[in-house]
Image (cartoon, rainbow, N blue to C red; front, side):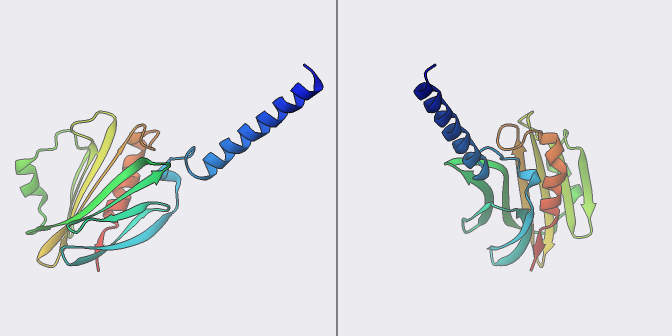
Length: 173
């Protein structure tokens, strides 16, 4: 290789490394949301104000009857996918399981003000899901969160505890 070729090759390597580093810094190369610090987000669904802990750098989409959270990097949506909506009636794990047995769920637990169901997704083997209902006056707040391999979650099973943490942080204000 001539000196000019060596210099051009070295410049090309530096440029490529710089672009790769910039992509990682922007989040495109490091999409594991479970490692991001948490922040408190607030919103309103059906007149109920709420707060929830979500990963930093997540976008919030207010859709009237639902507030959604996900991460958009370079026109690609990454996990987790979280939606908050309202419902009527009192949250009841017993009542829920009558109509939806959630056979794959690894956690079915009553809470002081509602319940949580979580585990492998019923329809997608490479995904996990969390469903939480919490009382909010005469209504209820519902958190539904999902994460799947390839959507920013290297290990869906390992992210289940983090999804539970997020949904369990849901509070009516």
